[in-house]
Amino acid sequence: MRRYLSARALVLHLALVAWLAGCTAADWWQVGRAVHGNQLSYLYAIEWPLLAVLGVLGWYALLHLERPSEDELEGRRAYEAEMRAAAQAAREAHRTEEDPALAAYNDHLAQLTRQPKRRLFGH
Image 1 (spheres, one colour):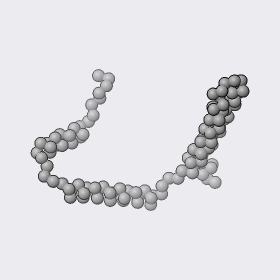
Image 2: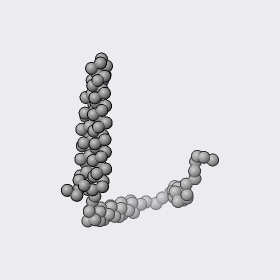
Image 3: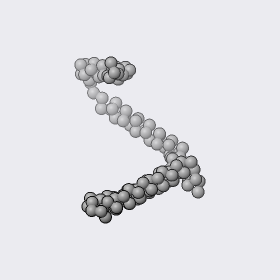
Image 4: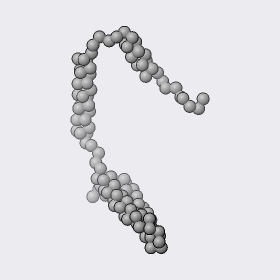
């Protein structure tokens, strides 16, 4: 029940009410235009209820979105650290003798990435 009465949930409820009211008003307007002869408005009269359904689905998804627990976050960090270590080990295993010119160029690129970025606009 706490899920439906939190501050975030109340904002989502208000957003859903506004969304549904807007879709209903737009649909009513398009039906009126279609009745008066605008053939394209029949398509829009079908589109607005579909957008209202999408809004309800989005509201439901956002309302039931749960934050990961600390155990899940710790597991993710451990997995990412393991993957970084495996990638580093693979790079070390496949390291070969590097051409001196290529090594100098790579050192230059690494130096450029460490420097602060210059603004390229507003001179």
